[in-house]
Length: 68
Image (cartoon, rainbow, N blue to C red; front, top):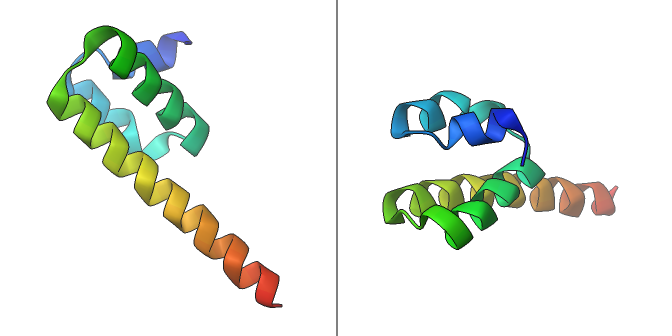
């Protein structure tokens, strides 16, 4: 995992600061790292919520694109 993602996982304030600028794949990478190493429930929940939001947005866009 790169330095930016590690810095974002440093603490709650850093996580919230970086969260909206991260791509879906980056959030997933952070989620997997958190599950394996740090295992903080609140951080896992926040990362999962953001990942789910990004995934739903992508899937909805793909779905609507397939209709055209």
